[in-house]
Length: 232
Image 1 (cartoon, rainbow, N blue to C red):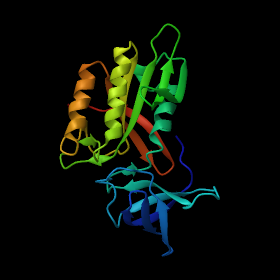
Image 2: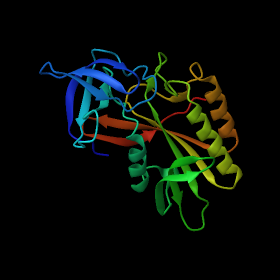
Image 3: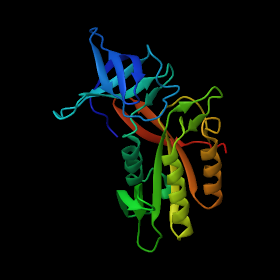
């Protein structure tokens, strides 16, 4: 997907989960919206270059949004509102071989117990395919990309909902989108949220398909590149 025009800045601090202060090249300091509810471990170090976008919505309290972070090896997509669109675009273009041959794609469709699936794929003569997308940015010391970067009861609910889909005869996919180009492989972050790692393995055993895909991240575009090795 194409990104809006981005402006360079230096990260000063990230705080209160959804706020960050940064400094423009001119010296001006801005408070920007941080669209990421996680801990952002490994992608929020003060002093690092970031890229921000400017909204033309006059109703917004903060006009600027933090989009990308420079890790010294790769741009990292920290805007968790982007991955769903990136995956939907890749699916529509047939770039996920295991999820080809569906004729309809819908987003944010109600299912389970008060949940909305990120993407619902359907085609005549096939069971519906429910796809949950998770944004992955956590790079640990072993260079493996992991999820989640904080305890997440919502992520656990999604696993339960996908398992219910399989039990009811549907197809369910947990799709981890890796929003950076450094590191290698994907695994659950057992040290951070052991219950999630256990639930992910159980969901897989119950028939939920687990996919992890790398992205190419640049200041003007984010695109799915290739499947990543799973370690779990």
